[in-house]
Amino acid sequence: MTAADPLARLRALCLALPEVTEKLSHGEPTWFVRRTFVMYADHHHDDRLAFWCAAPPGVQEELVAADPSRFFRPPYVGGRGWLGVYLDIEAPDWAEIGEIVTDAYRQVAPKKQLARLDGASSG
Image 1 (cartoon, one colour):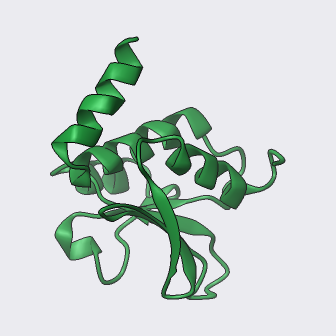
Image 2 (cartoon, one colour):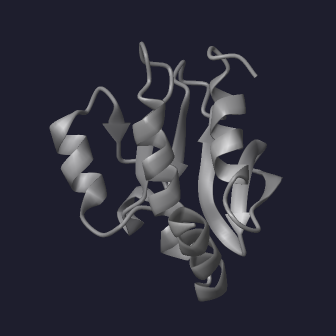
């Protein structure tokens, strides 16, 4: 994995979470913990590289309003509050992206996996 490979970095963040699996969905790598929580987004071929993810209530609106050069309302799932995060920007903040991915996981993971995540975080 190189610093310039955003898919590899995103994959590593997602797969580090308890019981996450990766499958292709709509032709793109997608990460699941029973349900989808992150989807790589290069399939619209609009010259933008991004990912879409579940987000806590209000976060999409807050981040898009604060920095539309980094965040967007994704098609199809944006109406459900999902967040779009551009990866093709100069110097993505991977620590922040890690927090966003973890928050997405928390939106869909069953309680058992959340307990494992919280146990790993505090131990």
